Length: 154
Image (cartoon, helix red, strand yellow):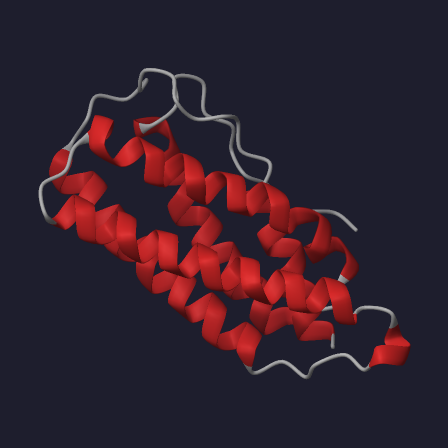
């Protein structure tokens, strides 16, 4: 359960990002953003696969509801990251992809509460940290005043 707790905490950190939608601070670099989108898709796949291998809490542990909600949120995050990556690879720019980015960040913010309630271990935390690191590089292309995502403290 320690691995699951770490993963949840890492996802929680992602939720601390500032709202998207403002004009980008960093000049749009299609090649760089596309590469970051690919990296994010891989990182969220890794996070999802690692989380999936975690033992499920039993009903008596009091974490079951948060665990299954977080599971759905991570599945959604993975799907959103894949869609963003595909759009960027197809040549979509800032205006076309900002809704996907905003949706992903909203999912992360919602997942934060559940992540705090679920116990995870080091492996999940490392995968969440990797995804957060990519998001921290991608965020300046979408936000004028990007907030660096920090790990969530329990």
